[in-house]
Length: 102
Image (tube, rainbow, N blue to C red):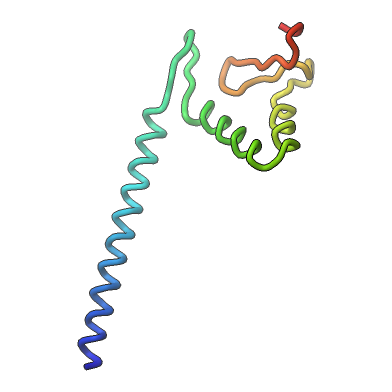
């Protein structure tokens, strides 16, 4: 009958929406946990999710695109006063582009 198929569809819809909401809440909780607990301190410098891991993720994504994007990622770190020394990734960190630059 039409009413029984309508109620089945309603139950199915409510079940799917409930599962999707539970998955969304779980995903947000896991993301919040990772963001809040992912930090490392090395020689009095604190590397957090935002100042280190996000730039590393951008580095990974640039490498996945092409070699030009990877080169551009390194170029964006370079300081104006010394293009052979990059500032970062991370706080209080320098990237030297040549072995004689240190």
